[in-house]
Length: 192
Image: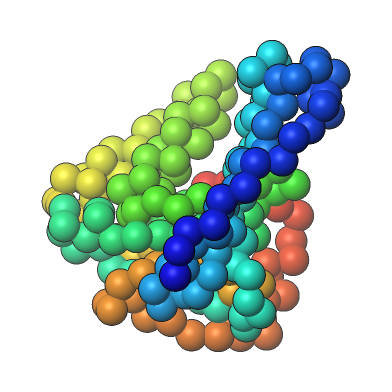
């Protein structure tokens, strides 16, 4: 299936009001095992606003994926995370829940771990020494996973089924009612 791309002309940036600086680009691709996906990005060259999202164009059930990261080779596994996906790394005590400005993306396991690391680094700036040490310990464990020295499970849950881990070793199933209810909490990034 050919890629379909689009560009929407927007006269003014809705954030800063600048004229002729705001663009919305998108493309629709077929992703094997997943179906048609639309990637969109909006940006302003004046105020540097950026937003990206990935959405499935078909209806999907609420899904949960689990993938065991056991080697450096596993870092290359494709991950599609929509703006409604929740990421869990239980062995590292990390949960990343979507918020109102959550963005979707297509990446790989290494990219997901890098985003989690950046979020932890940002979260431990200016906090007390005990919590900073815990954050640094999680970062060390993330680095060990990336170096192939530690195993970790990557769990991706999406109440709309628009996220996926694309690998034959990824375990996929429908979310339970309990899991689905737990995703309705106030969204935030937290370390368990």
